[in-house]
Length: 538
Image (cartoon, rainbow, N blue to C red; front, side):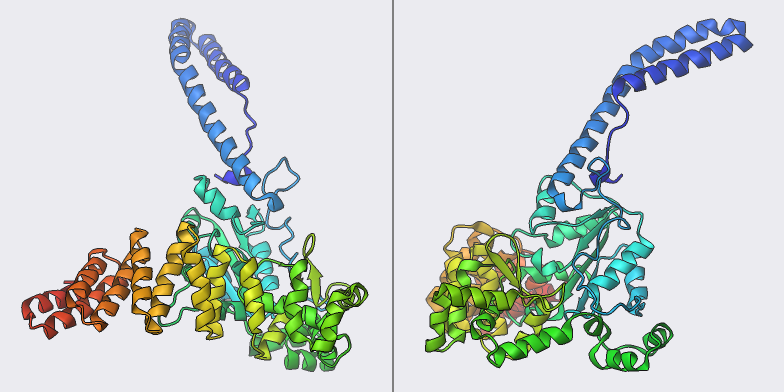
């Protein structure tokens, strides 16, 4: 069953007439052969009178359920509905390459070695995530694999962060469909698809494929103590890394496809995706901006890049471009941000078409913009810190869920612990349950590192009070470590036991080890051995 594409073509009265017609026709045929069969016909029709109506009612209810599922699925996936009466389009008919960087040079597609592994994972029912730098060809490759091997399958392309999560909350399950998650970092995190929902979708026979830029993937990597919720989702995929370096087999395909030796050498130097795309033009435009071609326009591009670098995934509101651009200009040039003519000229420079498909700053709906992702990668590679004032501006505009991402980026990527603490403290007191419990746990860890024992204890307790199956044991373990460091052996013991009692596969064994050491230090060897056995799974 393909829930998103179901349509009822069988109203109840045609089914009823069909059933009656079959019985009458069969009976007439039997009488023609066997004249005494007329009374069997009476019996059969009597039984049918009793059995058929309830059966038809059950069939009708099943169809209505399927129609309800279909309507709900279509309503949640508006961007993927096809012209055929609201059903999901096939993968072959859908425009899976809509987000691909359009080529500047027309070169035939060159198959890459990773396609074999991608197809093998998908056929085995394992979700696949393609990871690579911007313009390396992730989306193009994924689209080719899907259209060539699963082209007849219906495809669902979520048009918002909450689309799949909303369907999961309504107990609507897509089945035997392709689920297309291009730039998956836009679709995960608070309010987005969860690890559990991903597992359920995979178990329902769906083909799930996603892509993510290497830099965005790196920013979501867990540290020794911090583990963003997005990472749990990414861990549910088979990871395929796409490199710009061509293998020997790909070199052979390139040679057989591209006859011009000069073009082949250039592709080998800069990468296939970058060569056929607009990488050179984007890099040159950024260099011109840095050299002073348009200082206001270049500052607006840097402003949009800072927005993304701080962990924001939605487009930057136009109203925030000026305050975010100010730190990138000296005092004299800042005046241009507040002069309408100068600002308009700078915005025109930033949004001008480098080629018919590319601009450094791109409009994204009413009064909002996004920075071209390849330009974002180049700017990020420069290693220039996000200005202090920009963090404050962005945090003021962010909601609780976004502040979790900002706090994580501040701590892990930029080592701005005070900024991270400020973000997580704001979220923990927001009253929004899900982001608040995440923030409380991380806040406890950060405050403990900073030596704020009272603040850490209060944050850990808030996470414990949330009752969440994952955060309670982690917070209890953190509290146990804190109390043990403070010399509160009884409190530490109770906290460790709470973590152990949760049965959490990651936390419980570590808590048992800590408890065993604590008990051994106190001379309680019997209980220490028992805790050691718990840690070993005994």
